[in-house]
Image 1 (cartoon, helix red, strand yellow):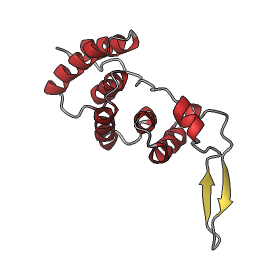
Image 2 (image 1 turned 90 degrees about the vertical axis):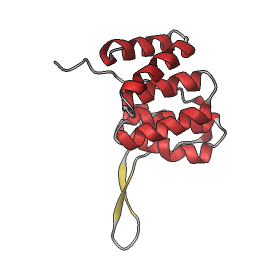
Image 3 (image 1 turned 180 degrees about the vertical axis):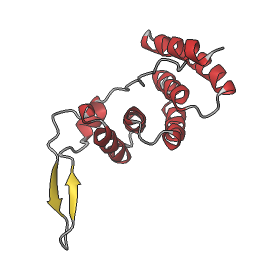
Image 4 (image 1 turned 120 degrees about the horizontal axis):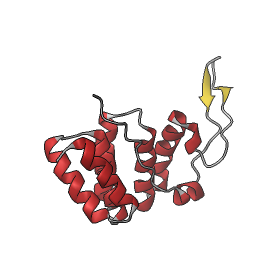
Length: 149
C-alpha cells in the first residue's frame, strides 16, 4: 500500500458511498502511518458514513491534536457531535472551523472587534453555530495535496 495511491482511492470510495472499503483502506494505511491526520480524516468520514459517530469523534479529536489548524477536522468534529445529539459541544468546533476558513460559515460572517471589559478587545467572528446550522452541516473532506517529489 502506498499513501499517495491508496488515500485518494479511500476518499473516492467514501464519495461513492462505499464507506466499508474506505475504512478498510484507511485502516491498512494507518498500520504503516500511525496518527497521520489525512488518513484519520478520511477514516472519520468512513465511520461517520457508517453511523459509527462515537468512533469517528474519537479519531477526529486524535487528528486535531496532530493538525490543529485544519478547519475540516474541526468542522467534522462538530458534525460527529451533532450526530451524537451533543449540539452544544459541537458549537465551539464549528466556530473554530469558521475562524480558520470563513467559507465554512452557513452565511457570510461579518467579523468585528468588540469591547469585553477593562479596555480589552476581542474578535467577534460574526457567526454563531446554531442548532439548525449544526443539524444541517455535512462532513467536509480534506484537500489532499499531491505527493512531494
